Image (cartoon, rainbow, N blue to C red; front, side, top):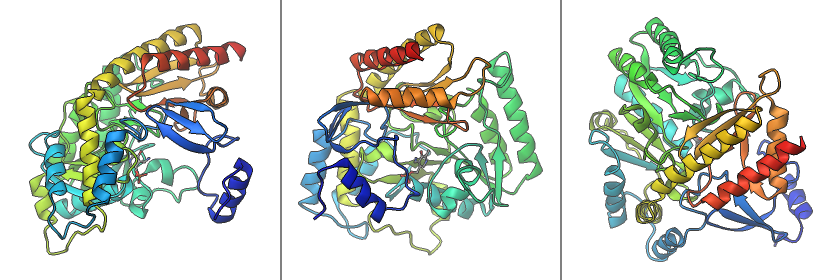
Length: 427
Ligand code: PMP
């Protein structure tokens, strides 16, 4: 048995067993022992406010989700080669959240497995190999996941862009130099369309997140996808929306990110919050694309769609609905965004506050309007010392990421803001 007494001992054991290619948050890592709703508890007995872990969508250890998992695991766990009610029941409920055209599900166990499968589906359906990806996008840790993730292949010791990958510039409005969102949108649409033109008839899929998380919580210009999707389809490709970060009501008004932009994708990738911490992912697609995949090669996932995962996934949907957590995300999100914007008026280093619902980003810049990673990390670490979790990301790692469990309330927002203000005053 491994002694669990001290952080130092845990770190020593971890160093022995675990590759250092896995990162640890913070210079002084946190030894977590327990969690509930929007709070985590460390081994020292501190209560930590979680403004970061979006996977725990309906709250850490939500009792209804835990109970659904325990009850089903104690009764039956098997795979999709047998018939059990949970698969149909969950599929029906999940699909009811989508437009009619998206009506077939493949269950897997992670966002990475989902993005990998989505690309296979797209390439099989279109018989086209090239994939257009978004600059600074992230879609997964498999070989394919890394191939389609500019964030990985271009940064962090990646091996560069593969020949079958095409890149769309990240359509970030802030800092683009255009006076209006419409002008910025036109600029990015024209650039991306000319790239599509170059490879006309060769592009099997276009994949993008509705708000680019690793790019630094960057929403797309409102009309961007409405121009890009038709262009991709006109040359025979399909459009994939990666909803792993933003799906399931986090955006408040929009249950799915693609709804922000008034488009309907051909393939949707789900993960993270889907199981509130239990490993589930899925690909949702059209009947036609699913049919192209029915070519004699069986699709089987040992754990994808098992009864326990389905029961947990269904409980998550039930909790969102019963507790109206998407409405909470909208209300608390706009309250918090307002507070952050006010703070930005007093502290110009908070140069852009963006995002939707409880998926927010704050760009931190210096006196010369340049990305200020140091100050962003000062804030992240300062908050950690006050027992509040947030993250940083973006190409320059200067964007604060705020994406808490949807239980996050106004008092929690006030606490986050007052601690940020204290830190900004000290600097
Ligand atoms: N897509 C997006 C947008 C993600 O953020 C992630 C995970 N960070 C993935 C896919 C991959 O999901 P997983 O880590 O569950 O494999």
